[in-house]
Length: 145
Image (cartoon, rainbow, N blue to C red):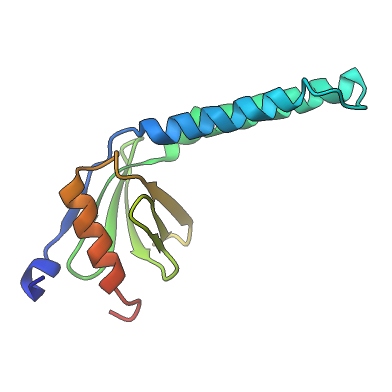
């Protein structure tokens, strides 16, 4: 990869992921199915656990979506410009410790206001060429750059 191409801004505009939705639904359904097991819990404890699982599902699938990242641009200087779903634009810096695999990327970002964000990207969220370029750039990136 040429140095000039490496320094070009990388635009990320992810789509909703079917894989992630299926994983979240399966995990929550498995948690609900655990309630049907013959446990030595009273009925009111089962109701409390049921409400906790339902609230967690609501947080994962509905409430947190308004604070999610809609798109991002990795600038030449190494910082990110994030656009949130609610329309706000936030500048962020990539932290060390981001996970890069062939089937998952987790970016650890810190915003200028001090808030930390984690951004999960699956291959079905962005096109394969952009996913490959992001993976290569993250593997070659160093925090001191």
